[in-house]
Length: 296
Length: 296
Image (cartoon, rainbow over all chains, first blue to last red; front, side, top):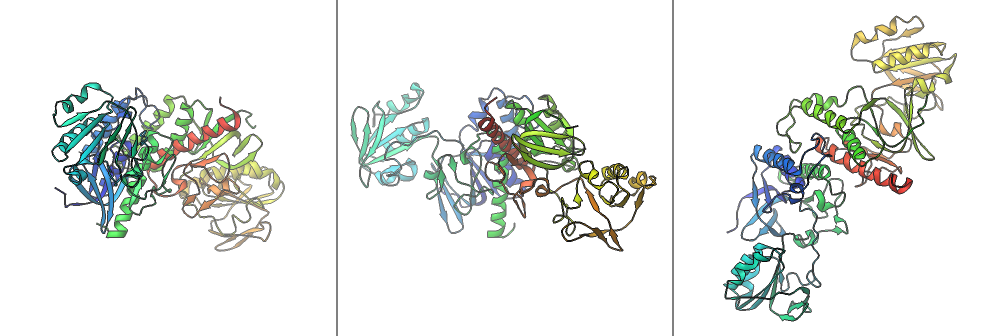
């Protein structure tokens, strides 16, 4: 069920950069939506002490995180729990696809943080050609077929359950860190679980299987479900340097209307830098909306 | 009396960008000096409300300014009241010249804010050729000669008094906003006061006078004493765009070892941007010191 509302600014991510971007967009009276993960900024949460964010001497990361969330709430913003799997340009802005809802926005601020994710061999090359990041979006393409789910998080197991209603055969390779999280999948009789480590997606122009450490798995489609999606996989054609998304001093990316802020734009991975970039990205997004669509 | 101590980082300016830079340099265990003006951030002081600095919802500018200063003190930093009039590269870093003390530092972070100062005609062209920003530095060159002082602040009047001990003739053109501040000068019998508005410095290759609105003043030297000095007048050869000092994503300027942060690097003139840039500039200055001079 796609939403028809058009936001001025969609902020992807709810760490310090994302929250600062949303705050500044909202204060400038733009219609802002935050698309965030289950938990905003695990990195901040786990910092025992933050001493270099000007104005707060000697505070724990968690205390600061609470202040950030409270500040966001105080201006009337809330965080929509949504894992964005793809961002697509359209006539009047962008469509942001998440698991089961799509959002429309005139501009996007990417604040996805640092991703330590390394795609497996051939994953990027075959993305959209048998490899997908979103079961809800692409599941129906595999009706009656065999699919594999590379399950890096809990949500992947829900996705596997969903796929089991469509596909003829679902094989889950659980790659979660917590062993006990896999129980739910194992109890579904339509899902086969293989404990192994994926090395590569196989196939020339279309994915035909997964090369696991101990065996070769032949399937028609592969769903890779992780918390983090690399920015250039999120947005087709986005320029990315080894250190992060390429941005200019306005925090504009190479794609008109898409800005980026925080750790995802490269080092230093620091709080003040993230908050400052979130602000600059938002203000330039505001300017872009006003120029392109008329001041509101 | 020049100081012989060499600092790792000299921060010029004590607004949010400068304080954030100093804080981050200090936390990284570098020897930091802040060269600030009489009053740190009049702009923040006069903001009735700041609502877009993440973590502090609904706070006055003055409250935030106090928190910033307290944070700086809590890490053992203090602000040296010094108006830097010139920065000169040398063998092992830079010399920063202020009214009566010079400082040495391996790197410099410029955080001088937005300057609304407009130099008068020919001022920049003849700077160092009869035009000076520092009486203590250049006064002795004009022994027994005629000098004019364009006095934009209270300090300029002290400079005029000092010059009256060296020069044969001192003419002050008071350009202060507060009328009563000029009293002290008028009481000095060696100083002549002309109430007029300077339009241009005259002279071809060397300053020979000041074109005032109502008359022409012939002198051998002209001292222009303002609170703000434009960055490219502070540092010879510094690249400046119409909007501010040219910096890259590392906040490095075109001069190796000199970084810039905050309003002086251009729009948006915003607090979070300034604090973030201060951090990035400082961390890159730290990196530069470690690479160039060995980690401390």
